[in-house]
Length: 350
Ligand code: GDD
Ligand code: MG
Image (cartoon, rainbow, N blue to C red):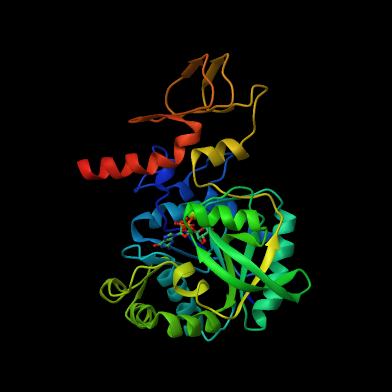
């Protein structure tokens, strides 16, 4: 059995001012009617052998998450609530422990809740190929052919061929610095880590025990002392609070010798910034992506998004403008990675 595990606890600061701590990007409908979380869950419906997803999110977002599942008429396997965000390794550990506690050892299909995938069929095909390899006790990553020296991604060096369309994971480097990323890109030997993983619950737990035993200890206790509460499962706050805060990439993928990579060609994009929303969005004849009530004259290559008021722009190019009830962002399209610094600045002021 495949048990999809949707990680929905991030804060998505680079998509401020739409993404907020109280209502982060995975809950937003950034294009189309469904939120990114909903699109992640709906995409899985084509995977017949999969159970309903187990969602791990912060307890303060629980009603939004439950409501979004209700809208889709999908009954989640479980909504596991974190009292505090401890990054993705504890979230995966808690999901694996919860699954094993039910007497099952499913293949966990770990999915970020905030990705754009163009080719849904291709995605399902890769998932099926991944399942077969995960059943053999391997930790599967899905690798994307890189087209820029992105420093916000993990990089995977492909090793020898392992099975049809799959390679031994020779090396995993989470978020290298720019010179290293440039070198990786030029070498042609590396793929981006898409952030989706597949492994059996017992296998990832064994790897975590080996490389990050404090996480397993804390999460075991957090599940044991946790409690069902309506439609939710609350991890015990005291125990979970003792877990180190670290991503699954640093905790396991950089260290494991059991990794396998499946190259992906499915029009993948981590909707990590306003630039990626411009890249993936539907453009008008002047290459603008316009969302909401927007009027333009002589505007090119821009992303303009209005939510509450009319937005009008004249004679500008390569801009990002995002209007919300209480904040407006104006940025150069090539500087949008720095929006996260605005959020840091605003937090200091609070
Ligand atoms: N439940 C839970 N708890 N989920 C979390 C937490 C947490 O504390 N922190 C992050 N997440 C969720 C986010 O909502 C997102 O869906 C996913 O986990 C990945 O977290 P990000 O914070 O978006 O990671 P990243 O983008 O910096 O890096 C990861 O994704 C890249 C591709 O998008 C890594 O896996 C990279 O190697 C990868 O290239
Ligand atoms: Mg991300």
